[in-house]
Length: 198
Ligand code: ZN
Image (cartoon, rainbow, N blue to C red; front, side):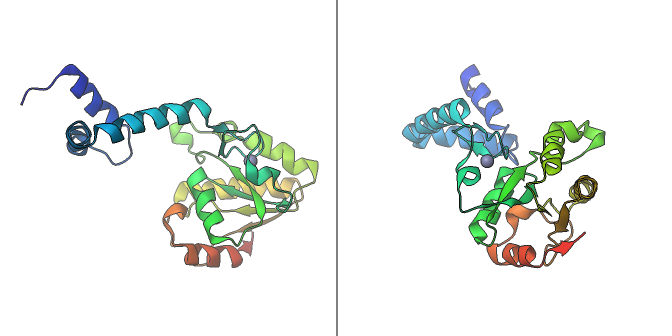
């Protein structure tokens, strides 16, 4: 089978998606060109638009089109309760449970010295500053239950202690090695309500 340069580049580009290997990328490219050219055009358009408009909230680092996101601006949310998660997908999963009425801080990663990811890459200097300011009364650690997620939680707990802020860790029902965004809402809500002081 011969394929054009353009087609090769499309297949290569699709491989940037998580879990997409050469075979799947090939299948997707052929599908889009053969069966859904309009869908493909729409995908290209909204992808471009999202890249142009979606930024990080200045306060919580969640994805938003505004300088400050809707959650941070919502007067009904308790600004004194700050929940730290690794990714916007995790914050989204917690939002779906409806149990949390505080605000978030999104790391966009986890501490990983081997990959060269340190505190400043996760905005922890900014978080430390906010903890010192005194408005935050409880820091809830909802990083993943993986080795790196636990190490990050440990680091955050030390930051909170240093600032005299109460700190808790979600634990109940979260499987060891588990990633938050894949938990069902029930388990996650339970994990939240069963959070323990650390
Ligand atoms: Zn925000």
